[in-house]
Image 1 (cartoon, each protein chain N blue to C red):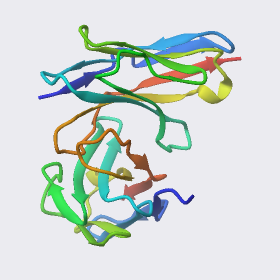
Image 2: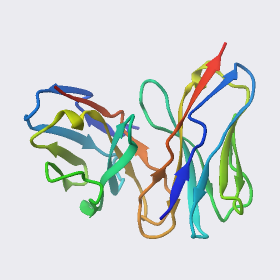
Image 3: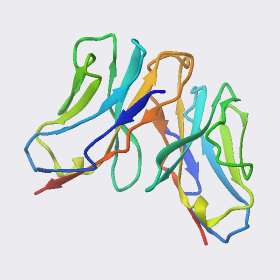
Image 4: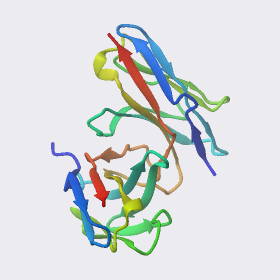
Length: 116
Length: 115
């Protein structure tokens, strides 16, 4: 079975550029999560969707960050304009079942983002 | 607010030995779920084991087992017969049973396995 697929695996870009990270959740999963991982802050939940609807975006750091889930099989996280402090590994995760259930989240391989 | 604490930033174990990673959490809920995830240098986040708070029996997955102490709000991970491939960062995570899918992660423990 295909797991959560993220692209690109690595992204290096200059400050001020727009960055788009992509995620394909596991087929049949109805919740999708975007995380950011840094040495200083550890794993931070940025936003999550349930049935393609954003449920909680309180972790999105600022207006430069936006996320969409146009359908059940695709989501994007966009940073515009990017800044060096956005450099991190960004993970996408998906899970099945009701939000209240014990189903685990399944993670993608992450995108390592470097903003110069 | 719920919090998860892993007080050991780094641990090491000799190959074939047993090691225990600590995790404590704070919650006022009675029903919740706990997870351990492994993140090797390849940076994948891999589910190792999970425990439902309503179950008294400790979860076990092959060489991995937990010691779940609900009253003490403790959820430690025991790795038996440690292998070189167990070297990774391990994260403890909490999820309550309310209508939210959010996981709350600890800071992680880096495990080194010595040959």
